[in-house]
Image (cartoon, rainbow, N blue to C red):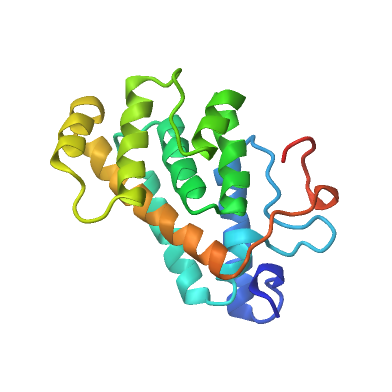
Length: 199
């Protein structure tokens, strides 16, 4: 069975993880309307559906999400910018779908989203937005250590804690993009989504 369509009803361990992932989605997405399970079957989709195949990894994922969210130094907006930089670089459709909607909830405009999808930062970005973008983009597109100039300039804007969080979040989102791509997680078809009018 394809992991993105696996439900949590197959055994006790997967069932417990199904409910834990469902709780995580409900808490994480808050007022943002995102299809993380299919209304017709309650099957989890995207990252959540994939993780049901390996419950011990799924539990570690939830623990790591909790640890990441506790890191200081980034705003919800700069976190979404970092996530979208990774999603665009890896051309990960499901990640673009989820974080595009979360970014809209944090006030990013259509022009800003289009710029990020094109691998650019928008002219309307604040200095904090640009610093978060640069760290993530350099870690995605560059090789070797993060350049000293990027580190120094970013610390000057985000602070040391902010850059530490940006590096960890970029690495995490690249992991997420990799499993989404590796298992070919599809964006739910318009007729299967709980929201309307977003592509």
